[in-house]
Image: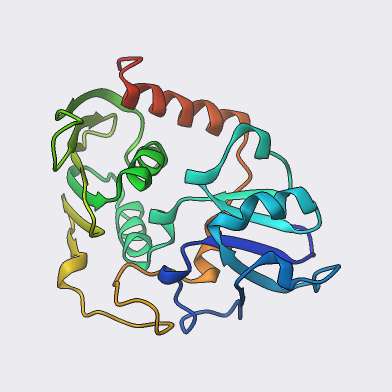
Amino acid sequence: MRRAETIANIIFCNIEKLDTHSTLANPTILKSLDEISGSSNENTNYVVAATEYEKAIARKKENIYLPYSLLMEKHRNDQVFVYFELEAFPFFQSFFKIVKNETHPRGVFRFRRTSRKESLQSSMAGELYLFSSLFGELKDIHIKKTDSSKVPRHIIIMINFENGTMAHIEYTVGDQEKIELEWSGIKNIVEFDSDQMKPIIPNDKTKSPLTYSADAILNSARVLDEKMILQLEDFQKLLNGGAQK
């Protein structure tokens, strides 16, 4: 994975989810990019609300860290690093390590996520990419969607991966964000439910247990290569019903 040049980093994220205590990056949180007058300070990690990302890309002076949900084709260049929000959450990092440490990870994987419509639509392809990087290529996939005019709206994805893992993935459109994860493997059983976690308030702005640090974003972000772009596009086509595995 190519590392960023030694210039300032600008991280775009949902600031309400940012944990400013469990971090070594010592981020500087800005309300607006206008607070950076002239040149940014080298080796400084700025964190800005995601709505400001177009301004930063136009500056072309810093390394830009964007969530995959905001990436557009015109943004793909060597100074734009992309991260997946799910991968930045501590619980998912722990789960990923547990499965990766198994010699032949095989089991039943269940994942349920509730979020706002705009968040779900833009994150599903990226999350399928993460799951396939853990369990291998998709052997077959079945997708069921409820009527988009009815509430709540559900998207259910059933997958058989090449390593023998079966997955049941469910997305629900709702006002409250929630994630549940279950893994029943040969050696390990993992369970996570964001509703059962003790709420933490990292920056006096949120009680959500779904938080991440600037370190996690910096360490997991990557420049998308052509192979990865094609994989993500394939997943998006599957979700849109334009292709079958």
